[in-house]
Length: 510
Image 1 (cartoon, rainbow, N blue to C red):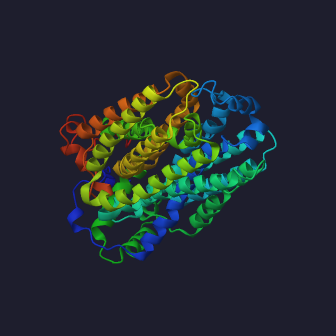
Image 2: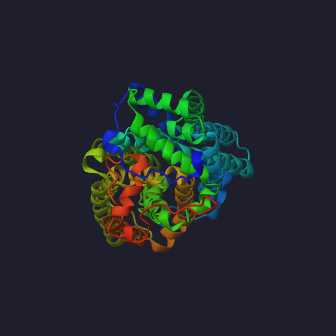
Image 3: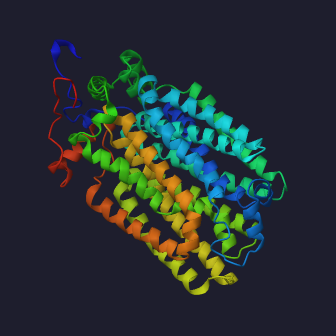
């Protein structure tokens, strides 16, 4: 508690116009190294779908799926519908969900770097076990360790990037995480394209190569500086100021430092961040922490990326053609992230989310119509329609890559005040992985029962999320991370819900 018995109230006035500093090479390198954490998430998303369509892998662990795959035209939509196969994919995300909640107090108490290192090491163990798997139990244990790595990494890396980045470039630097994720997906697709020719052990190489980004993340975490926000929160004000001066390239950081000190005093007075995030003053952030990751998954993007090879094989593409097609979608996703990096701090978050949503709705409806009219049991799409489906899916992926892909992580990581930032990011990651788990577990069965209607299901959700952004998400472009609280107090809807200033009781609960 501060001297004089005063109860801390956090950042009480706006100082954004007093912030000074420039983009330093030091902060850019730190953000690039940290963002490698996104590549382990992307690599796994990309690798899973390819591996689960490889004959060598299916013969060893899921023989019944391998048998049904040989009867390719009996039921195009249902041949991969197997709960064990779905569990292989989705077990990782359930483990990540639990790990992200465990990571929150570690990230808060020991710093962002510690969680990044823990995540990299866990992923390294998981990749090694998976590559050497001799039975389903080893395979699932490896997946769970990968999940722990993803839970820690996804919890800490976006926070690290948001806190290190200067205000005017926070969006672009935070998107390094999504860029690394998309490059991980593309790399995985390229690896699968090569290893599927290496029967029957190519799948082991695909899974084992995940050790490379895991090693980079672990070593990189050891070399990174801690964020000034985290150092100040942990009581190291002098070290925090030195890091701040170094990453901003100037010693004139008084305004930004004062915001961090004010925020840390309030943060340290909060003993139970998860309980505190339920308070009325944090209602808008809690809603965004739940809705943004939920909506990101309900675009249907993970279904397309997980099961792109399966999806394309179901549409009648050959094995090689399906992996090639999914590699193309991976390349489009990686390329589109550069559009977002270039535009996010110029056009703002809302413009990208709304325009991307509209394009995704149109693409989902077109794919549903083509599949509904031209594709069914015992049928294959003609070459012309198959190419059209891939083009439209690529346009969908393009729109996702400049909108909900990066911003589904960027927006939640920048909207929380320091006292609940780690808890809030844990909720964001947990919700993201919960819905990833649900969709991964259910998608093959949904594809079997909904058929082409699966695309209309996702299109309806994209409509809901686009309307939500239009009415309820304020623009965070150019607003310092410790001053975003003022946006909610000015917003037409949220100002009716939150008190104008923090209310603190005798027990220091805000």
